Image (cartoon, rainbow, N blue to C red; front, side):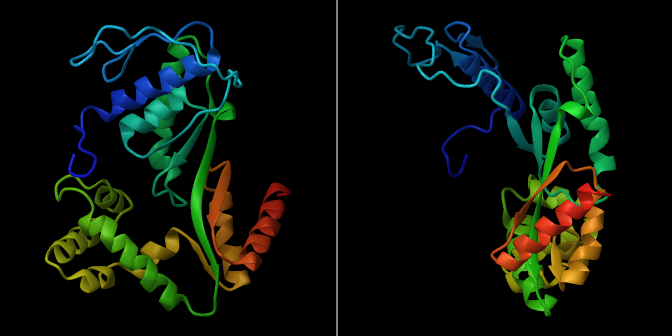
Length: 250
């Protein structure tokens, strides 16, 4: 509301409407009509002149174009599993799948109740992982902590900060509280320093090739079906490609 000039509304229903509308557009079965809680096509609300009519996209796309959703809350993860082909989880680290699994299975069950066969074999989950080959972890952790402190400490409203909530869910409630207190008090450097190294280390692959190789096993067994890596190092890309081949052969 502060930056985009739009009401917060109901994000769950906005996402649900959006996905359903896009599926209708891709299918091209008929002109698109949608009467949702957040979106209506054609729009008939305040300010309209009454000339809107249902339209069909002039683009002939794949009618089964896969839809992936980036989500993290219980409601939106369930929505993702129900309506989408894949999930881009926020703040995922190895060991967290047990937290999300019941939500995903509930989403599958909702799809089946609508007559849509849905299960783990039909669903992709792609995590995000920074990778850096280095002999010195300290500067990498320091840079990451500055960014984490910004999001965990100062992003959004004090009482509605999803990044802060994710830190709590990952098992760092006291750290989340302290980081936010320091950041909102203008002590940004101290807020970053309050973040433990292990919080950063859990969410990425850093260090020597051998260290990365050993820690990659946790990601390979985490329940993800794939991994997007974030790196500026060609040698890191080659290393991860080799590790992915090894994981596939296990």
